[in-house]
Length: 250
Image (tube, rainbow, N blue to C red; front, side, top):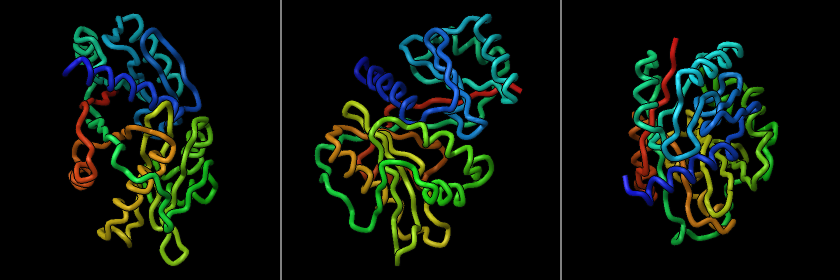
């Protein structure tokens, strides 16, 4: 990875902490350790926020105690920011891969800064938006209260979007702008309306909002096995900036 791309990874990872805030956050050396009642991987994991971030066994023990004390499995995200010795240490301690994701980034210089007429935007997460997103998720992500605990803490300029058809919301997403870059996430489409290009419409709508907020780039994270989403984002101009693993120890 080039130095420029590694620097961009750092910019994205630091902004993610603000774009997707956990109810509880601790700083331990070059790591941010976050707790969000088990809702979402990145909000319930230790993540590096410096190039060459390291963890010794004492810090690993401490982080594991913190998560177990909160009733959560110890979880660490291994991004390109992690020092190789620390990566090897985490694996040797028995951490297994829970999921693997790509971090994607796209330039917004050719995106029109306009607001789509069929998308409703609110600067704060409303009860309706939270309920709508949670209702279209499964597992831990169907918990509206835990989702609310995250999105209600966003303090950066944000857009919580709902794509409307016939006056009814059928797709949702959000974007958070910070210092020229916008994170895009929580993209969900009602099951009865999938396959109609609605995911593309709401993502492009959020990219337009980000451009109107004077952002030069958009970034997002997507599961490496989600071929449909990867094709969509590639068609929208996103490139794979980095790959990372989320690892847990039982």
